[in-house]
Image 1: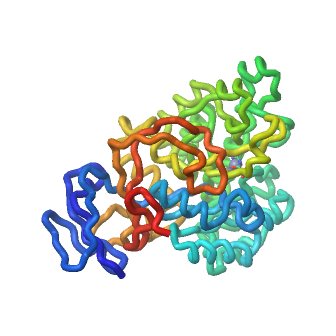
Image 2 (image 1 turned 45 degrees about the horizontal axis):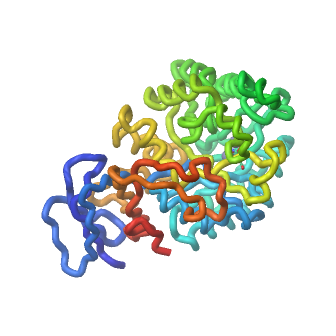
Length: 427
Ligand SMILES: NC(=O)N[C@@H](CC(=O)O)C(=O)O
Ligand SMILES: [Zn+2]
Ligand SMILES: [Zn+2]
């Protein structure tokens, strides 16, 4: 294994420090370090963060390898500063058995760009009718701890209760896509003034909020852990605050796009802005930013949702919902919240807390002597313009095409080996 000497990195934005990376861990830290035979990485002006952890990634393998594979999605993640991603279960076949989650886990290992932690489906085939083999997935080589039917809501309260009871036994967590399906039939975008103007069927905020309200009460009743995916409304924030004050074991995520974009984007009729839950109002965006700063919303998760060209470049109503996120997430969070969060706050919301929720004990650790060398080096002064064709993802559906964003990932290390160097993936 090569030894790396990182010169002058500012850990969490602090004073410049040298780091010696050997045998997969941070072996030494200090100023003026030297090591014979070490490869030197000049980190002058760069901020070191614990490797980012994404709790919500769609990798599309197995089944839609034309949109993304474990390898291409892993490369996108590493370039975005991530060292671990949790892969959603809505693949084809669905990740609802030990066999499928082990396959995804193994593909992640083979790609070797980030740790890929599979999420298991809650119900067989995401059909919302019958619990999947949660125990077998938990006991498998993939050691699944997060279960989600994401893409669909576990709408049946009895099934949701059973799932919470089941995972409580091994301190697992149910990650809910909060959408009351009876309230979103035919929905195309946020229900509000813009949808009325465009004549599109709306997804009302209450479709999300009513499920979150129900689920926090179920989590309280069972005493189990609930995680709420992609929170998108101001009303959801209010329910989460109430639940946390009561001591309910709930965590929540917000996506970068819900921190930045609004439903006004739909006036372009460009399906790149079609996503579930939909882009909401400026007031929702403001509430979500405040909730992330306050900690009512715990983390940022990308909901990276690659889609093939034919599924996106078509009429709005026929387009699939979802947008890319892994390669732009850190820049968007820096853009929208660095002033209020600081580097430590970003590390908390994009690395430490998601690692803790997922039970990934080797991740989410600040660089320190003896700690696994999973970290990323960011140039906060850089600016870059998003060119969809240059992204590592196999898909092109970024809402930030031709947008200039702040900050760039220069290097990422996974267990002491660079997955990104000089802004380029190493494999
Ligand atoms: N977010 C989306 O709009 N789409 C996701 C599913 C999901 O996260 O609900 C997808 O798998 O494409
Ligand atoms: Zn979802
Ligand atoms: Zn998703």
